[in-house]
Length: 303
Image (cartoon, rainbow, N blue to C red; front, side):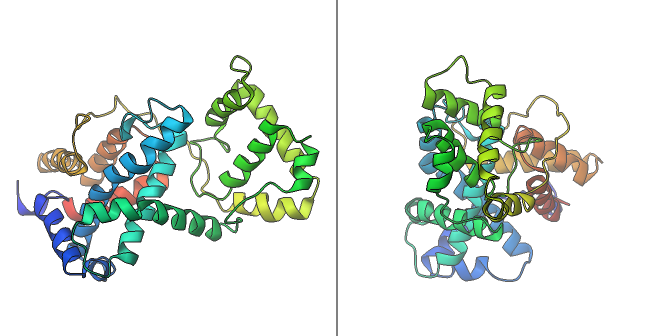
């Protein structure tokens, strides 16, 4: 493989991250102006972080939700769950940049310890950017309008939380499939908790919220208007299997870029190949914005 097509993540990149961490210089290096070295280290950091986030945060969360398939591995996360995972990864990466200012003996262990607080900080920042309350609570007047029904009150909170995160539910406005599962869990009505029934519940909650127009505009309408526009992704071929369940983030990144590099060397367009491979690796579960960001980063190095 030519030097121009060196994989984004090599073993030495992880060693460099750990050495910078031991010297107390990691945060400064990751916050330096963009250049080839910074791009390499960013890629290595993402590959180091995501398995930790999945094992420490995502898997326990999905098990609590009853999402056994989603808890198996990252590539099996449902569309309603995968965006939250990526948000958490980005929050932890940002947390490393902000907090890694003192010597760190064991970088992976340190990341595992700070991951939860970093995701909480990231969640609050994202909500703040959208103009949504950082700690949403269902007001008493709204609970009264919903007859204090446990499921409808819970759904109202889900709506308030959803408008405050930037991701979307694929081409839909609301993550109805996920909420239908929660409806069944809360109400015990497994046969009646269809997406249609859940959609009607959402409309009932929104109608109750609209009874106070100023509150609705500030807490629902304006944050919702700042979210990404739901955009259906084009269907993609059978997902590309790059790694067995035991493979690490390092292995996945190396194999993905190796595939891209081989095809580019064979004469294919680097951007088209990168888009195809990245979408297949993530089983077409990335939003258009996230896909574009990952593709740009890969093309910068591989191209």
